[in-house]
Image: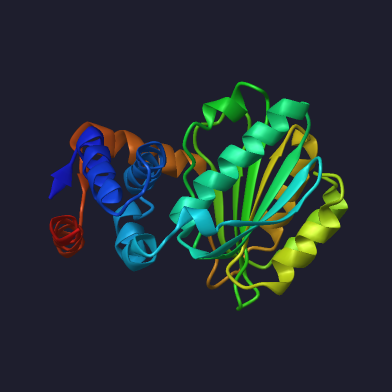
Length: 253
């Protein structure tokens, strides 16, 4: 079946509110999932996998493990990445804009990060680039880069570039403590807002060179933009079984 963007957002908001997610955050997450679906990144499938974790999430149990002028480490205590990605984004934007400087937020003990971001115009209008990287036990990483004035990101899946390589780019001051935390705890991710776009371009070049030849995948902004335009025109085609599962979750919540 095909669903329009407003219909999908409204459906997700209802479901998330029933899961006791605060309205404002529920709306942001609903837009993130819908954007991923419309960009061809299987947002509905992601939400289906996260339903149990979302239902058991308690935002009051988020723990701030470390903070300095530029950086924050948040222990999410196994909360859904759909929640923590948006929280990390909001925190990094606020921190960067308040100081007119680069900012970094690390989230540990979470599930898979979201790839899409909500309100990224706040970054683009301030000439910020946006970087996300997620760690896995397999030693491969998912990297997401938003360049200023770009609505769609470049996504590197199963990339061999280790997150520790970030230290040499000096995107954020005192990044070593953050990277140590990121490299030692499974299911963690990092969000960076930066104006150092030349350094971000150098990192982009390194990621291109170290993409896994067999298991790796690069998704370019042009592909995401094409998927978005087609799905906006005709509606996103949702897997019937996934849609039934999500509707069932709404009815039971």
